[in-house]
Length: 226
Image (cartoon, rainbow, N blue to C red; front, side, top):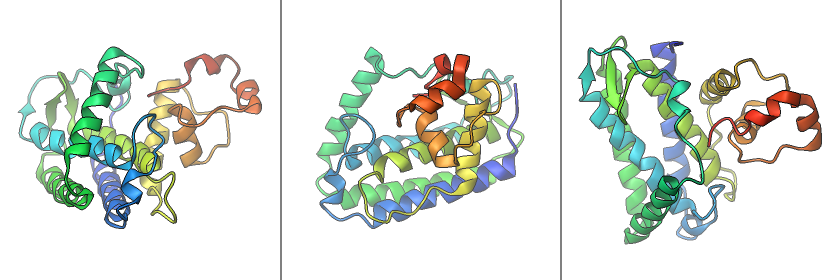
């Protein structure tokens, strides 16, 4: 298994969570109902789904273990497949709970305080430690990297119909690239920028004819994660 550098992972997660905070803090009431890149979800749904990650992180940081890792920042993504019955149930759960918030601004406030709490916890947890999350054991830096990838992708999801949103930090897109290259089994043989690789590698943007020719046998691996 490959390992992630702890300082780089924490820095990238901090920048990414705060970029999401900047995006959601500037939303108007109408913006919350705008469509996202996630099929069937609006901006409010994506923000609530993303909120589940820092909540889970707080539990994970309080659940250290001495067990050997069973996953790293790449293999963590192998079980996630879009379109499954479990994914559909989760999508419906997210829509129902997100719609129950009386004020979207309350959801923005909850995201801000929870993500900052997760960052404070991440800053004091041992960078050489391991935690348990989702029935996996994973090194802390690798766990931080998975949170960064999730936040970066959903930042792109929720800002697709917004005017002048804050961009995804370059450090986050670099971790996304490392993750996608790992899942691909090699460095991408294409000159895509970080955001394009994130979108095409996760199936959020269609591959064009040139992409398909250039990828050749690698095409069957796309999307690399859902």
